[in-house]
Image (cartoon, rainbow, N blue to C red; front, top):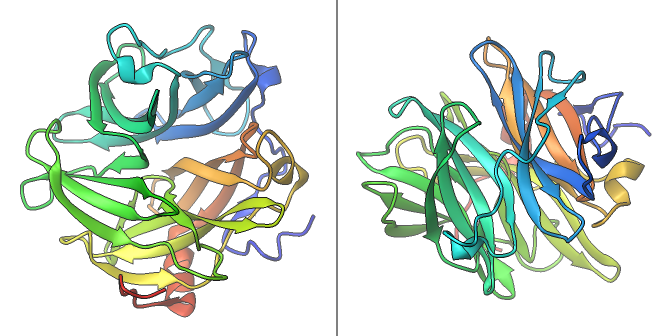
Length: 321
């Protein structure tokens, strides 16, 4: 199928690049990976893996070129631990990875599936073999969260998406110690009516720091008579006051088109949780879950994303929509 609607990102010809059939142990599906580029150039995916009960855990896959020859851990890398962390009763989902230079560690913000719905949990690692859990940091119902890589005005910053039915918006919260969070501020609202991002929105991968501001890929959900459609848009936030939205796209730039995105456990979903940016700072590889069933890859350019947002965006006011 033509990518005429996806000028910013081009799907890899080998998509989907990872499926349940690639796993070394029995699983139902693999999708929504957190992503990082290791110092030796290896691409690491922390994949959400759904077992045959319907509960999810994380498993590491590594590749020298980020496309194929994946070395997948022979067993789960991080399992839910409801005995010590009861909020993980029904599994752990949708990790976002941020390398934190001050701590010299990787922060993993993920969704813990509780009796009362999804909440936000935090863990740290320096090798993706052993993990230090911080536990719950945002109570249900809350998800789609990522940590900024450095402090803002002396405080850590977390983007997340609490739900206030029937709509859901993006918020940012601050902490002095990564454990106690407050100073909650609304960042971006779900639009109303017939917009592509009406109903609910949420952070997709962690923000990209650029000279112009924090560039955010976010997902928007529109409810239709035949179900939900998940598509991607862009927004730019101030570097020093990240709750301040400078510009927001009026259109989506990436949407379900291919069969592996339109048909699966949850059809019509493209859902990235991570990316790598090649040395030089412009070429971006976006890894995304396709229809909650497999993992796919699309490549783009950060500079072109900013240019597109300039042409297709407008100043955002939180009271609009």
